[in-house]
Structures are given as structure tokens and as C-alpha cells.
Length: 99
Image (tube, rainbow, N blue to C red):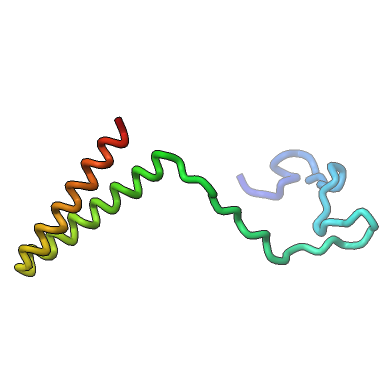
């Protein structure tokens, strides 16, 4: 099924001008409107939700556990134990706050 749109549809293709479409936007004074320029900066969130705070705390616990595991591999056992204890304490704090 080949051919032009007119052949396939049996009608000529219509212009979008009837619905107000213009290829270049026109300002209210009749001149072309300027397009582009920098967009306004995004608004930053001012307050974090409680769940976001918990998520950040959990990520910190995860980082501490990863650091503890790396220290253990390097045979720095006291450092590994300290970081693991810190992670456990923060995890306990998270559980208490959630209740």
C-alpha cells in the first residue's frame, strides 16, 4: 500500500493553520516571540520527609558496613570492628525512631 497520503486517504492533507498552529510563535504585538533563553532554576526541596531522612540514615549504615568489610579485608580488625559497631548503633537508632 504505497502512494501519497491523498491517494491512501482519498483526501488532501489539511493545513494546521485552521486550528491556530504557526511554525513560529507570534507575540501579542504581532512580532515573532523570542524562544529560548535559560530556564529558571529548579526549586530545591526545603524540608525532607521523614522517609527520606530514614533512607539517608540507612545509606550511611550501609556505607559504614562496606567500610568495615574493606577494613577487614585489609586486616585492620580494630577499624573494622569500630565501623561495624557504629553501623549497629545507627541501625538501632533508626529502628527506635521508626517506632
